[in-house]
Structures are given as C-alpha cells and as structure tokens.
Image (cartoon, rainbow, N blue to C red; front, side):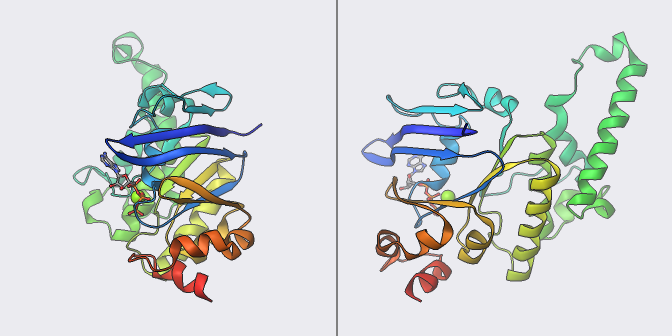
Length: 266
Ligand SMILES: Nc1ncnc2c1ncn2[C@@H]1O[C@H](COP(=O)(O)OP(=O)(O)OP(=O)(O)O)[C@@H](O)[C@H]1O
Ligand SMILES: [Mg+2]
C-alpha cells in the first residue's frame, strides 16, 4: 500500500489554479522527487499535504491509510508527516540542542501538569529524550555545536538543523522543500548523503523538491514533474529526464534552475 496518496488534489487561489487534479502515490521507504519550473506548484503541494492550505472540493489525500484531506496541520504532524520549509524557520536565539528538542516535544508522554504528579519520572524521560536528541545531532554532524545559539551556525549547518528538527518529530514521511537551496555543490553532496543516512536510520519515506538535477537524479527512486499545477510526467529518473513533455516544460523559461535546463538540453 502506498504510504501517501493524493487523488484529484486541487488548489486555486482566486483565478489561479496552483494545483490542478494531481493524483500521486508514494511507496513506503522510497525517495520521491518533485520537480518543475518556478511557480509550478511544488511548495503549494507540500502546503496541501501538511494542512497549511485547505484543498478544493473533490480533492482527496490519504496518509498511512488515513484520510487527512481536511485534517488540521497539528493532526497531520502527529500522524507522522513532517516537513522542512523552503525558507528556514529556526529559533536563532535558542541553542542547537533546544531547536531539535522543540521538534521532539509532541512526543513526550506527559502533559504540562505532570511535574506536579511525578517529578522523578519526568526527569527520567527528559534524560532519555536528551540522549536521543544528542544522538540525532551526532548523525547530522552538529553534536559539537549543541550548546551554541542556532543563529551562529553557517548556512549549511542551519539546513542540517532544520532537517534534524523535522526528524526529531519521529515522522514516517519527511517532505523536504529545496534542502540544497543556497548551498555550495560540495555542501549539497554532504547534505544529500546525510539525508540518505537518516533515511536508513529512521526508516523514512521522503518527498524532495529540488532544483539541482544531479541531486534528484542520484537520490530519487521516482520523480513526478509539475507544470502549471498539473502532473505532466512521472517515472524513474532516466525516463523523466528524457520525456519530451518535461523538456518542453523547461525550455525557454526564465528560472533559477539552470542546472535542470542544461541537463535537459544535453
Ligand atoms: N498563498 C498564496 N496566495 C496566492 N497565490 C499563491 C499562494 N501560494 C502560492 N501561490 C501561487 O501559486 C503558484 C505556485 O506557487 P508555488 O510556490 O507552489 O510554486 P513552486 O513550484 O514552489 O515555485 P518555486 O520553484 O519558485 O519555489 C504560483 O503562481 C504562486 O504565486
Ligand atoms: Mg517552492
């Protein structure tokens, strides 16, 4: 069974059809790429999946067998669908460790009154959580920065921290919106290999939006291509790369993804 399935997913903003009847399946334990020219609807698609936007009538989204079409964002996150944002949202003044602890919070088993009830148990759980978070920081290579404010990290490190915070939620599926944006090619390679390590360690299924074609081609099992909100192609990386519909969508566009265009032209 697919972990995530959309049927006829649509979203219009006034007269603009940002997502237009997109049906898509993501199989468990795969990396699914989502590409398309600027403004084709990729971030909107993520916003629909995560309950940030309400889809139009007739849309259907299911996650892990549960209908989440009209579920609120916090409920969807609880079910195990987590995301990072195209623009980073970190707590700059908080330490690196506290930033991942924030991600973990929904999983602690006790409520706000728990300290009054059983202080020792809460302290024990806090210790377990802290150790798990420290292990996670090891994985993303930020252990030595645990105590410094997030604002002092480099751009690449902040990307990793955003990733760590999403993983701290213990998701089944992780949506990554341009994880490599603004990074040098070497840093992008490092980031992607970290992502693949995390995928194995935490049994993740991933959807990744990325403009850097090399990243998409080398990491994705399946790629879906959006253009003007419609799914215009889908398949294995080699198929999609050679699909005339995809080449057509990218040709003659003013856009940031020079890399994709170059590869399509080749
Ligand atoms: N909240 C909103 N209100 C109105 N229009 C929106 C809103 N969000 C997105 N859009 C429009 O929907 C279309 C798709 O935008 P979206 O951000 O999903 O594209 P994208 O594929 O993520 O682009 P990029 O590659 O530049 O990140 C665009 O025309 C955009 O202007
Ligand atoms: Mg976007």
